[in-house]
Length: 420
Image (cartoon, rainbow, N blue to C red; front, side, top):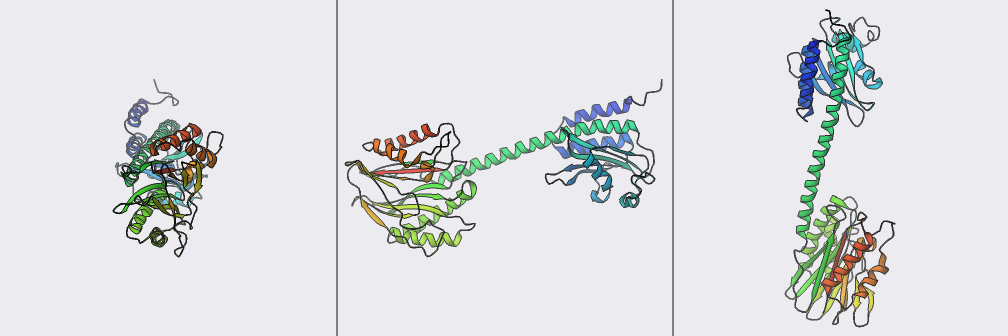
């Protein structure tokens, strides 16, 4: 009995079975589409086959260009009728022509005439009514090669191919995301390695520190710098912006500040020198607010330069009073000739200073209320007789309780130095 034209041939059914296995065998899209196209060309008696996929900008790019010899065709953009391809990609209506040379739809197309195109089949690749590309086969040597059954078959293959495209792209997104996450995790580990591994051990003094990036990496940082025997430099800083650019600028700032204050005659000279170097290397309008303090344990003094940073809070424990160590200059990286002044405070028994970045006061809860200066001051005063470690723990707990499950708004760095 003769097979009905509406029924797929045994050969076509066998092809669909093989292609189903091929589509499920790999997430390498180019490999899968090449193998599929070779099979389609052979079964449909086509001379050539092409797959074009739509990019994010809407353009169509060739992903597969195969000949009947199962070799890749060079310069495929000059081998097909762009009018046919673009029409199918735009309208989503498949095209079947037995002889493009005499087909009224294409007789006026130069590419059809120049390439000597005869039999053409072109179908859309669709995912949820969205056209993501086209599948095109042709034969320049014979007319009437393709039939309605071939068109039906190619539409079925295109449906599977579109699913393969979607899965491959989702897989690539997952791979890229995983790679990016690994790289960011490595960047965070590298950045964290620049922070002090432990707080200083100075007889008669206590230190505590905290660093919380809002993202994988941060622009905030703190540092402890041995300046000369018996004295210690303390730094807290906040680079404008967040993420990787801020993290890179933070590393630059840390290196320059360390080198500058280590051989300076005074904190103001050290920060002035650091500012000149940062201005020379700064690009893209980035700058950094910073507070540098030089602790002289023997004299119980703290000499500081505040370059546009949040004023550290000095708590005189015996009197239960808080005062701010005011700014004495603009942020680093803004003006190379900026002037920075230094001030000195004496720390009595039980006194301590809390250095912090604006991620503390700007922290927000689920209702978008800010933690604010008033809460920060209350926590400090409530623990004015506690150790540096206990003060830090209280600050971290207060922030955690306030923010709750909300995503961190900004990086946070805190340093506490206390004279017991």
